[in-house]
Length: 118
Image (cartoon, rainbow, N blue to C red; front, side):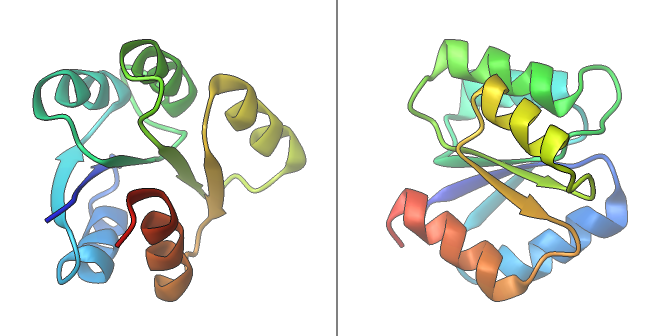
């Protein structure tokens, strides 16, 4: 089963992602950007769903660090910040796709499947 790392500090948002993904993927969680980087180093997930606004290290900085470790690992931004400037910043940081909250379950599954092949 493919592994999805959900980098999300908000418990209710993480619970929603778990509800969407639990029947399709193995899920692991990072509560901040630094945890996401550390988990990528040790657990080698198949894709990262990255919130932008997190404590310790934000999602953009974490994405840059992850792309330095594993350049081909897909990182998909999942954020309430849906402005063009946020999208541009995410793209510049190396994110592979951008999803706005609130997220559609089917859209989320489709995007993940696009990158991990399931």
